[in-house]
Image (cartoon, rainbow, N blue to C red; front, side, top):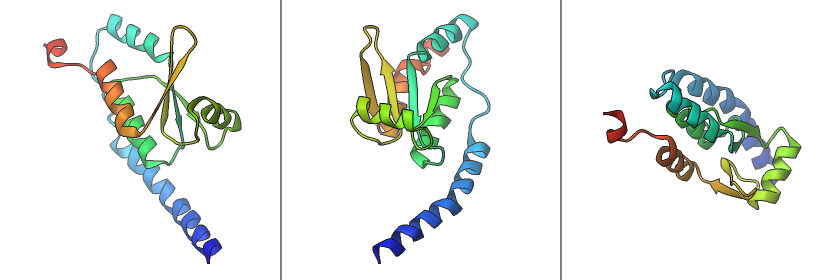
Length: 136
């Protein structure tokens, strides 16, 4: 019975994955927030210290990728499902294979591993979002 349930959910994921990816493509913001060229260069440099461990069709990962597009962030995407090296790095560095996970590299070579899509989106907005004072 357990095997039957496992195959049922695998089949369901196979059917739903293309639908979720199509939904992402159709609903991802095409226009990022506006920044000056200097501001965008600073943001791009900061993004070099970040990496998002994700699965392509994970709905929580899609949520984070959409927020990255809205904020105009070029963060490296690392697929922990298809790439065994990324999966191992996530497990060893973050302590568990759970996505989405944002790796924030520190100046001294240390890293912070941030799990949960809402926590990642909140951090990205605090770090890269525009406040009312900035947009005025």
